[in-house]
Length: 142
Image (tube, rainbow, N blue to C red; front, side):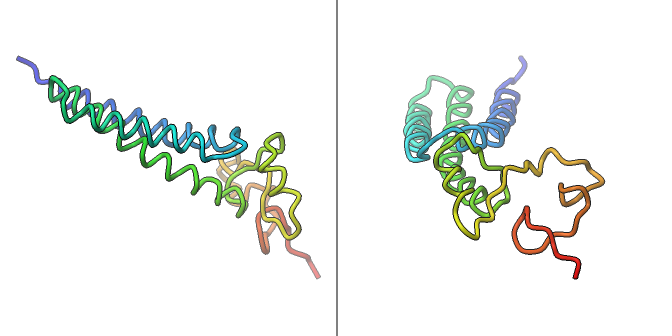
């Protein structure tokens, strides 16, 4: 008889990591306040982990626990992604009021440039110009 538990857990891990990478960026960019989505992720994560304690099979328990722990980590990552936007390490969404405030702040390092969408030969993402200070600020040539 084939044992598929490991395969299902591997698929759950892969999909959980994918969601963590894509979903956290998506949620943070569109949420005016990250506390509500973080609370939802925490609640669902705790719920899945509690269910995994009483699940009828090892496969269901493993998948629920993997997804549950991943969602708990994603709630933490929402706050880390918010800091990345403030520091200019992730793109700000000007349509989001919270991000618009980051972009408008004096001495802001926030930027709308998406560093993940640059050419592989351009490590800066800004056409090869040398950078100084925060992202989006080019070095003077004097």
